[in-house]
Length: 219
Image (cartoon, rainbow, N blue to C red; front, side, top):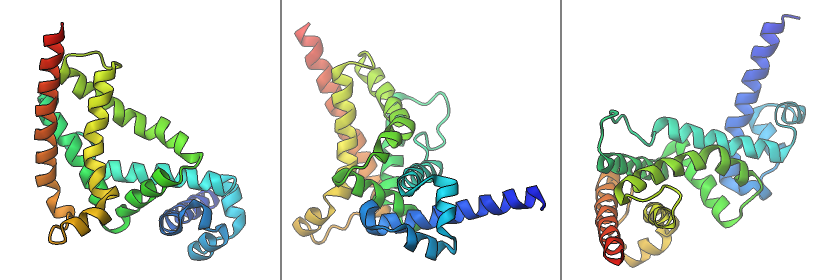
């Protein structure tokens, strides 16, 4: 047997199973999705799951990281900024990229669906996703906020401001059913990202400036 052909075939099978699993898990969630359904859709046997991912949980862990990686490759937090970009420009790019990942459509929308399910029904796979994928992004935002505040990166003010910025972004996804009912004429979609990014960034910069001023007054 040609080892190179066997390896290529294995890699193709792994990728096919992975991409199919992203869709199935996004549609049904970890608990309701079945390995049998994934294998049937991917035209693979159950042995392929055991060989490449160990078990259903291993597959789901790979799925979360793969979907997040794909979304970040399409919309990186810097969005093509040059190294001499200001902190304000970096914040706008970060917020805009996060919103683009949240509102993206088509196959990349799976990332948003998977994360929504994890927020309400977290699994052990979330631990690896946070450590390997989300923490580095959080540290980038903390670095921006730290510079704007003039505070230590690991300080509570930086953490609070960082979480407030992210909260504004994810609100438009997680609270969409309520927002649609409160304001039926307002449908936030991918085309609204630039407007929302500008608002969230401006609002956050104003809040950080005021936060910093009050902190200085207390000293």
